[in-house]
Image (cartoon, rainbow, N blue to C red):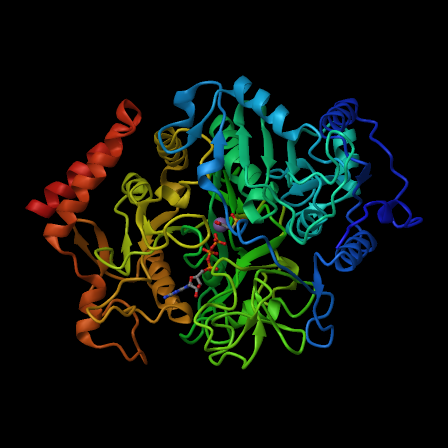
Length: 616
Ligand code: GTP
Ligand code: SPV
Ligand code: MN
């Protein structure tokens, strides 16, 4: 099928008459990118519903989006990507700091001017035959004290539609930029021009992308350049590129934190209100925990964010946090009526699904949405599928994009400009062995050690080998915009500033497995029991036992009422095996050694302390 971008222009008054900006820097940058990429047309996005409507109509007409049956899923769409463009590409993600040491051993570094020259080559003419969209957006409520502005230039209307859900996008942001607010520059091209250098045209495809991919951050100049992918964090540059990689550097320089964390408000049966921020690696349960429905009576969880938090010390000395995003880009598989009914009702309509399966009745399906699979589906690659096909109908990293405002459990003050005060910080990962269900850090320093030493089994959220155990400090391995050891140092510094106002820190693991290979802990709504213990610890009413690796619930300290869990299972959940923990300490030392002199001495001291207590 052929996509003619001219249809946009012949669409009469579908777009506002804006043809440029009065801000000379913005205008000069747009002109420069247009000269480089040679698009057919330039569209300044206003963020209106009408604009989104026009774009989705355009994509449906070209076969690049499928409109779902409006009876089941109004104003909702399905996108199917190229099978080679289904997840973040960590191997092609670069941190181009001036100084190589600033990127550190966990990031791919490239010398900034060499990378700029290389990018000029790949972006040259990359938008030929396409429309270039100027997408102005705010991370955080417009004008909020923790919020930041950005502009993404993209040649993907799918990206524009997603950005309209994931951020506060549109005309108002341009007005703020024109009034002098600072903003971050981001450029994106799918890398599939429709006209070549000699003027020969080719038709568009269902999911344009390029085998050659670049996700490049220039932290020193607060810039992002992304090429070759249309997928998720590779292409929605507000998200991982800006709100984590660039923002973590801003936070380092300005004294705040940009984190891969969900944010919730927790209300106790007595009416106490607490806020919890939790960092888990990709596809390890942030969305689920952010929408948790407690199984224990009297407790309530309200959602504030499911993926990213920006945290800053407030005037009262406490740590305050916002969710800089406006939508969820959530993992579909495993999200169902029993595991996350809140997410299921959030996506009742106005949702973009990517790489899930299509039902015969024009609705969507994925593994785990219902217990029983439909008899027949069209799978994520557009092929016929039955339960006997021997492959999954949805891609393991298939996702839904939906506005946070549609979430039935969203907190009333989720858009509070100054954020919410944080009572607890939680770190977690996927660990089949060793790591107990929950442990409290003895101090902020010990908490930073817990965060710095998270390991987790790899998920489908990034390309690579699923299930492989890897270090993912603070769940930030693919997202920290500077040297990871300096980042640990920054966390220690923030803790020092907070002093006695610092939140309590905990570590959790929902994923420990028993001898039969099954998860021991039921997870999901039952995780409320662990949250309850944390709150009781903060209130000072729950006892803990000191162990070499942290404070564990005292005998009968964790509320297990009504849960069908054997005594052996509970023992397995909390077992600390001396030999394997000493081996884990050796691996931690090896890991720290990669960062050389930069590892904060306080973390070396924490490691020494854990070892000492394991041996004595
Ligand atoms: P990103 O968006 O990639 O950063 O991921 P996320 O951390 O938000 O992941 P999400 O909440 O979408 O969880 C992904 C997977 O984890 C789903 O397949 C869930 O079924 C599974 N999961 C979430 N919570 C639990 C839990 O408590 N126990 C178990 N066993 N699985 C869980
Ligand atoms: C993650 O991988 O942590 C995500 C999805 O949240 S993506 O936006 O694609 O990075
Ligand atoms: Mn994430």
